[in-house]
Amino acid sequence: MNLSPPEHSMDGSKAEHLLPCFRRSAFDEPLASYHSGSIISHLLRKTLHNKLTSLDNNLLYLPSANASGLDPESNSTDDFAQEEQSRTSFKDEDLSVSEHLQAKRARVENIIRGMAASPNADREAESESEAVRCRRDLLKENKRKQRLPQHQEPSQSHTKTSKDEECHKLKEQLQSMQRLLHQLQEKISHVHEQNYSENEEREDAGSELSSLRLDGGCKDQVKVEASGFGSDRAMKNLRETLKCELTRTVGESIDAVFKKLSTNLLNQLSPCRSPDCSETEKRIPEDSPSDLSDSEENVKSRHCFESHGPEHQTEALSLVVRKPSLSQAVKRPYPLHQTPFQMGYGGAPLHDSQILEHLLKYGPHSTFCLERPSPDPMERPWESLAMRSKLSSGHLGQHQTGLVSVDALCLPHVKMECGDLQSMAERSSFMTLNIQEGLTPNHLKKAKLMFFYTRYPSSSLLKNFFPDVKFNRCITSQLIKWFSNFREFYYIQMEKFARQAIIDGVNDVKDISVTRESELFRSLNMHYNKANDFQVPDRFLEVAEVTLQEFFSAISLSKDSDPSWKKAIYKVICKLDSDVPEDFKSTSYL
DNA sequence: TTTTTGCCTG
DNA sequence: CAGGCAAAAA
Image 1: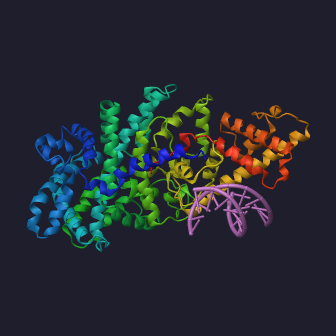
Image 2: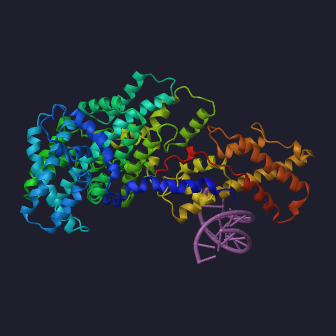
Image 3: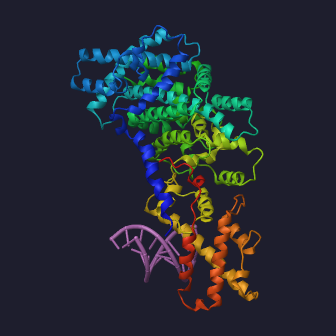
């Protein structure tokens, strides 16, 4: 078969592309790539310059601190080192060294968080002192994690502490992504030059940011960085940074996040129980017994969210942990019992593992998108892909440019994540980004369109081109079955029209042709491209013509008396497969 | 053995 | 289109 070459080459590259950065083990390594974190770090520091003038550079556990003499890796690995240290002894005295470092880190993180959450940042002094103690608590929790690696923390308070930490990290991640959004939009706008003025672009970015409930401080950051990091190199660095930050965020305490996430998902879906995030945050001290950190944590949490009021969360927390909460604060376009996670597929409840996959997917998606900002489409409704096919084949749409540029950024799902369910409903198609347990009608549409390129796709090709599908034996065979059915219909039509040609008195094979006006083509197009919104490649017409001619010849020669007369034709046709455009691969992030 | 394919049926 | 089956292919 001639199916293999293209997909095989993709197989390896895809896996290698994302997994290394996504696996936790990646961080047991020197974290060379994490050094690119200095980009964001630098930006943050730049933005915060006036506020942090008195801050020692060493406080920043960012690679840029290397300049001040720290080991290049110490910053990114000190967590492990300190945890290791802590694990050897649980006496409080042993905390002094690591606590010192962590306290510093916490201070910086708190300031950054404070800035993000509160433009005025008028509580920095307060947050600093809090941070020291919060950090101590966090450290304690880390020790506990070490002792109980598999066991779920019985005390809610520590889980929440960890969750809060996740909140912060996720927020940072989102901020980074938002910066990238801005930059990528600029990039895209250059690609789709027409119809896109700089001002519109700004507005788009602004609206995205607004929907993300970003505060003014963040927007300022975005502006600063957008002006400073437009180069490809900077983009690359940012990508790497995002990858690593994401991995770090997701990998560090994914278990804790998910335990909370899954429970919160269920608990907070009912508006009566946990109306919003702040409520949840305020519950922290109640659930948590008598740990000093808890009250501190509470303050910290409020500090994190207060600038937006109870109904408005900062973006990162909502990204993952608080999604259901946010759903309470906005219009609910779908039934209460349905979580956003369920939007994507059938409404079947998702299990923790699926949610985990969802989260895991999101990171790579984001980073991957950033790696191919312009031409590579994101997973999207096949209507959109069809549109794009038309666009690329000359039928340039009028108002599509904006859509493409925004969609291609792969950021709509970020927007959704931030709780704008209205928007999410409008863009529900993007929920295909989720890993599907089964095949959806959209997948069927996609498969049908792919049939225009390949009649005999290998299972590996299918896996490559359906990256949002969780493949198993059943799914694979179902997809293969689809193509088998497609072929069946295809060949039936061929035979039918070949016989019709003979009946019509056609004598020469050369008189047989298939054009877009042919009845045969219309029949096929109706079957595989019912909406007729996909520009069928000319190659398919050629293949169809060859197929029809093959049938015509065989029937003319009375080969159809042989029970297996079609097999010879099949052998010919299976060699006529062409590569499926990369566009179809869409979100091949994993 | 497992995976694919083709055919038939509903 | 999916299921079932048998045969072919890997």
